[in-house]
Length: 569
Image 1 (cartoon, helix red, strand yellow):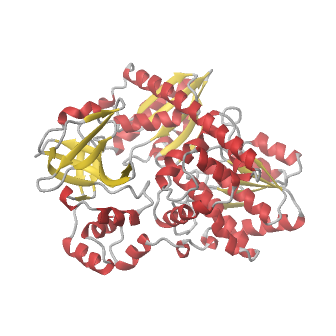
Image 2 (image 1 turned 30 degrees about the vertical axis):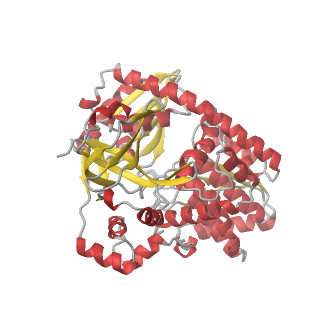
Image 3 (image 1 turned 135 degrees about the vertical axis):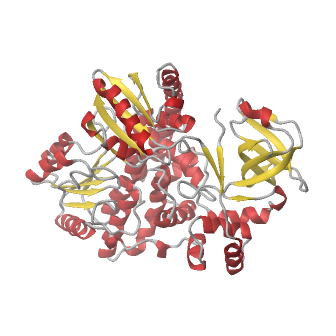
């Protein structure tokens, strides 16, 4: 296993002391706030206390005026509106939010979620033709459409108005498609203050504007629960407006009255939603919602959040749970196959910049997860392709220093279609183009990555001897939540630790142990997936860790979670 490089953040002691005094927090919390860009009292208080006032005015987003005018006209005239959403968790939650909002405003609505395997990603012309034949004259997308140029030209030529709400990056060459209105904070000319909204977040901004126009703005906050779920599960950065959306949504989960949401929380073991964190969304609710589109038809998610029947909600929640269990097994198989294919190929990760792995008939619903796991394992961008006949469908995931979409754009002539973000994307190409994709993508990445970029890193927020850990500190750390992309759980470094008792194996891969600093008390410690590295656990080690409260048999205790260990320097 390649040794990880530890990058310990440096701090200005004077700035830390000043902020700690101003906020009446510990120096550790002040240091963490400064490292998250909150070096002054105003920004730090805003970070610690997310509120509704931190949600931006929806009319700051380009295209909102045109979209609102067109939608209100359709509502007033009784004109049917089709909501066209993506099949991932971002698109399905956004579709549910937009549908609910339109229905509350009196709209006639329908929705379409494309099937991953029979229709593919994004807006497709056959679906628009079907909508037009059924009498729709207005379609609004959720989390898709920003690169759907050909279908939208057809729509424009045939009198079908399409409003795009999306957050994916537009095509640099063609710009935005010829839609009636385009809402996307990442489109050229949009000065919206926050570019990190998820697709569900963009849809929510449109809902906010619509409800303001109908003097129902007081109802807007009720949508934040579902918006928060979609935002976290899409791994959007939990900074800026997203932080406020998720914090406020989490606060309200216990008040949820939506039968589908309550049924899903129950199936996930989250009870009534009280005390839920972003972790619960990301690792409990999110995978079950995503499993619908990965394994079957994602419309079940929209049906779950739309039903008002408790029995139907329970049935749909159990359906998603079953699909998730199927997803887990298929995912395990495909990850094993992909790793075996990589190890058996000429692609030695140590001598390449990008792994491009292809297999016949691999389940397309989980290749994105496989790409993520392999990218994490080899610390290089990874593309996993499923070949069916002459066509390869792929998902790509990147590492932090590499802009994946730029790399794919350099190979654009090889693709039938592609799109995504800086660190995650989807592609379709001919089987014959796979080798050339591998060559050119490695060439591009080689010109933009350094040897240091390819060495796995552990980022340390601050040195914190275990003697300084307390329940009070852990309570203050909770004020930095929600944790997630862009705001990770704080990591600390402790030196010269002693192992108090022989590490105990938990399951097949985890270790349970107790550690103690030179002058401190023993602390319970868990090392997830650390069994293979048990030999490094000797007295005098240095450890990077996170800390939180844990409960067992009614007792609350401090627990460290190991991120990495090395021998003392």
